[in-house]
Amino acid sequence: MEGETQPPPDSMEGEARPPPACVSKVLDDDDLLTEIIIRVGFPTSLVRAACVCRRWLSHASDRAFLRRFRELHPPRLLGFYLAQGYPYDAARFFPMLPQPPELAAVIRRTNFSQRPFFSKEEGGTMVGCSNGRVITRRLNFSVLNNCVLAYELVFAVHSPLCYDYDHGMAILPGLQLGMPCLYNWAQLFSKVERDGSSYFYVTVEDTMEPKMNVYMWQAGDDAWHKHLTLGSDRLLHPQSTPKGVLVDNKIYFAAGNAIVILDLTSSILLTTQLPHGVDFDLGTTMLSRVNDGSGLYLIHIKELQLHIWLHNGDNWLLVDTICLSETFAGLLEDELTVDIRINHVGDYNGFVFLEMGRSVLYLDVNRRTLCKAYEMTTEEKCLGDIYPFMMTWPPIFPTLSPARNAT
Image 1: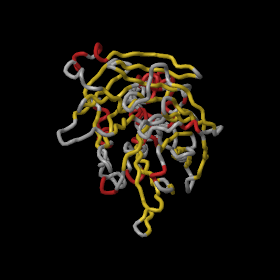
Image 2: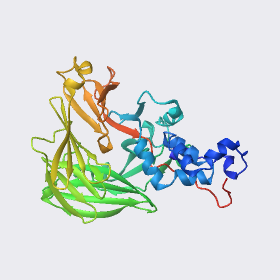
Image 3: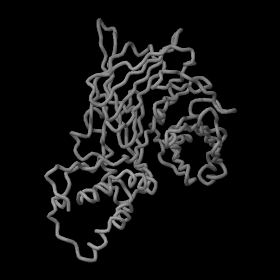
Image 4: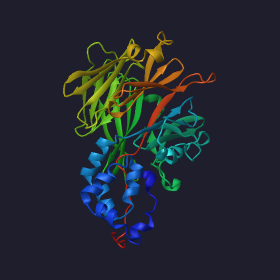
C-alpha cells in the first residue's frame, strides 16, 4: 500500500544468502509459498513480502491472489478523523483500539494535522476520506471593492500512510465557481480507476429553475472541465447536509422523500422513492455503497431500530434489522431516552457511527458489537463530522527497474 512505497530491500538484488535446504524446499514450491504469503494478515505486510524478490512480488500482485486475500482479510478500519467547528479546526485523528502491534507505525502516520494545507492556520477543511486518502479543501475569494465576485476551490489529496511526506500530498488545480450562495447542495466525489483517480464536484442551484452542474478532473489534466449541466424538476430541492454516494458511474443523493440518481455516462437524472415508512430526515437516514457496485444500501434508524435496506434494480429489500435497546442494553440502559442519530456509514454496510447525547458509538454491523468511540468534552458544543479512515486497497507495490535480477 502507499505506506510501503520505500525502495525495496537489498535482497531484491539477488545477493541474499541461500536459505537452508528444508526452508528452500518449501519456498521453492509456488503453491506452498502462496499459502504462506496469503496469511500475512495486513496489506502492509503483504507489500513487505513482495519486496523480497520478483517471484514473491509476482505472487503477491496477482489479481486472483489479491481477490482471495481481500476475502480473507477485509479492509481494516484504522480510526476516524473528527472535524469540528466552523471554519473547521484541523481534524483530529482517533485510532480504533485495540489495534495489532504490526500496525503501530501505520497508526502514527495518520495524525498529520500539522502538515501544510491541512492545518487550521493554512485554512484547510476536511471534506472527504476514502481508501487511505484524505481530501481537504481551501477557499480563495476574488474581491473587488469589498464585494466577493467569485471564489476558487483548491483541493488537496493527502496520503498519510506514505513514508515520503513530499510525495504524500497532491494538490488539484483550482476550480473557479460563482457566488457560493447560489448553491444549495455541493459535494466532491472521487473514483479510483486503473489509470488514476477521477474527481467530480457536483453543485445544485436551488432556484426557480433548479440546475445541476458536474465538474470533472482526471489524473493528468491541467484543469477542471464542466462534465455536464442539467436542469430538471427531478432535483426536488436536495438537502444540504446528507452525503451522496458514487456507485460505479452513478451518483445517489437525497432530495425530499426520494433519492435522485445521476447517471454520469448517459447524463440522465432519475428518481426512486424511499422504502415504505422511511423518511429522509437529518441524522436518521444515510446511504452506503454495495461492495460489487450492483446497488445501494440505505440505513435508517427509528426508535432504536436500525433498518438496512438494499436497492437493486427497481426494488427495496429489507436485509437486516438491529434492535439497539435489546442487543446492547448494557451500554444503552442509562441513555434510552436520548435520541440516537447516524453520523457516518461505512462503505459496503460494514459499520455505522452513531451519535448518542455527547457520545460517539461505533456499531460493527457484521459482528453485532457496539462500543463507545468518543466522548465530547464540556467545552465542545457539537460533535461535527466523522470521517472513517480505512487501510488502502489494493496495495501499491514497488516498481522494479529492469536491471534488477530475480532471486
